[in-house]
Image 1: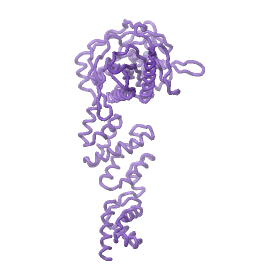
Image 2 (image 1 turned 180 degrees about the vertical axis):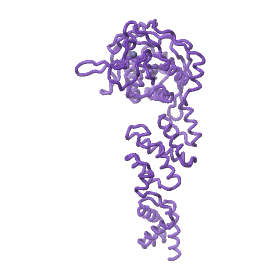
Image 3 (image 1 turned 90 degrees about the vertical axis):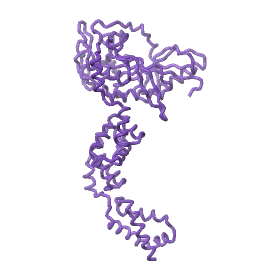
Image 4 (image 1 turned 180 degrees about the horizontal axis):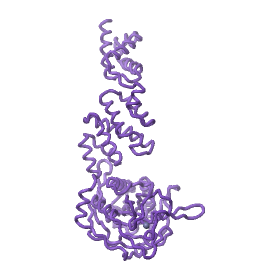
Length: 486
Ligand code: ZN
Ligand code: MN
């Protein structure tokens, strides 16, 4: 991209946790509740209200730490990060600063062509979210339901060398938290938010002292685009021998560009103070052991197990497991197959990663919605035992998606079963050959390309339901018969 410069990118990823209640009070977490209905003196910061750390938040933090091989500390502390903003009524955010629950760890990401790269993780800490400001024509509206919702912040070292690598790393974190079951990982709704620190240098040069921060990139694509623009900007400035000011940019989705928001705060401006109301979080070895023992299957392990259990090619398994919901769907459907053979598993995989995935994308819904797993398994059973031709199966599948009916009912109603009765097929072929004596003549005198025409006519006459290999075989015998008669 820029021969004489290299980029250094570090990510700060905020993960909204899936918990029943908030980080430090018993208020429920529900993003669909009416504004300002889920608050209490603790999350609104009334004087004298005492916070208590949510155990589920601590366990989720440990699970993520285990998954990335981080050090999990027996004692970690909470601090107050002081700043003023209307959606932060307390005037400070409870977060972990000096002693986070996890430090270190690594994320192995897969780049193109099977290249992998290890991204070092600096820390994972627990903190609370702020409220939401909604900007209207009549002013700013505040919804404080989100105040105190538990978050994990995962901070990487600046090990990412390009916007594409940053996107892949973020996607890997998203996949991980979904597989762990600790977050829904949705970027559009803000459950997963990504900020980036970025700088550029001459290859092998000293670690840059000036970084800029990019915020509010609410999709994988925006992360890549925003970083590309910012790196361009920094390189242009350096080429002109100009300085790069430390600065924070916010991605504006509508304008499709970065907007400078403020000069970057330094850590000291936040006046981090230990939170006097919260005791240190203690994590016993026994708790770590019990969480380790109940850790869900993670993406790499699942890929390997699916590949071996169902005899599938690595490429297809990658597509199947990219989204946990699709992998779950496939395994459910596989359990419904009548005959659990490698061939049936492969056919099911093809239909899941192509037709089904296509239908999901068209309808942007979860896999269960277009077609229940048992229905797809039924269709695959009928393809594998040659009851349906692939062409007819495609027709049945589109009706399944459109009308949400069981494939058995569609097949019965439209009389779509494959014709594998040799007498019926012979009948069709004889009729065609009798109807075209001059073409039969041409075929016999060497124009063998006409074979395709005869097969096409037979398929047309049976509305595509004739067993194709049977048609080819019977056609051959019939033509031979006519040759010996001639
Ligand atoms: Zn509350
Ligand atoms: Mn944070």
